[in-house]
Length: 202
Image (cartoon, rainbow, N blue to C red; front, side, top):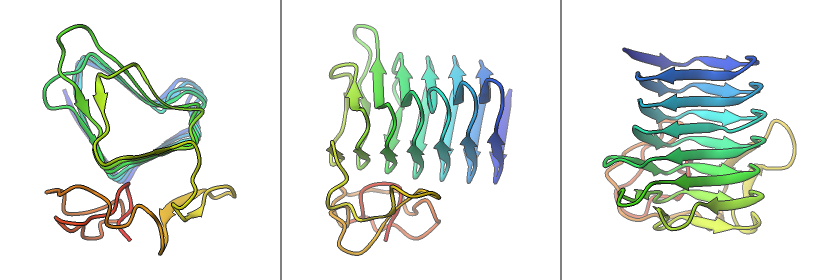
């Protein structure tokens, strides 16, 4: 089963915004927010997320278990549990150019022995209760990890409606590694060299 979601809002559900088993989900320009358990729950599945918002869920923002998952250009913030919870890594998993802020835990990686690492390149992972957990099974090349948001110059990180786009002077500007990803959260072009870290390209 393959489901494509575009420009949709999944909000205020008793459990998850989206819950799937053994399926393929492709979500673009969509919002998973204010759900009673979490934003997304995928098990034995394939998931691709681009330009999404996952915020304000009571529990985990994204629970990605036993599958192949790609998360790009997305904002994951102010969830009551972990922002992105990824289990049982597979070859092909990548989480890149996201902004993961103000969750109880930013990223949690839990894998079995001899499973491949999941790379988290060029992300902003800051001011979460705990930024990363689960040991060394995830790597964070060219990501910004910090206990505070100093120097990032977000638009409105502390006042609703919360906006974690960056502004001029941000330390995220031109700080990313070379990439083939050619767009950001807003669909703005992202240069191959000297792109900005996080979901937003200024």
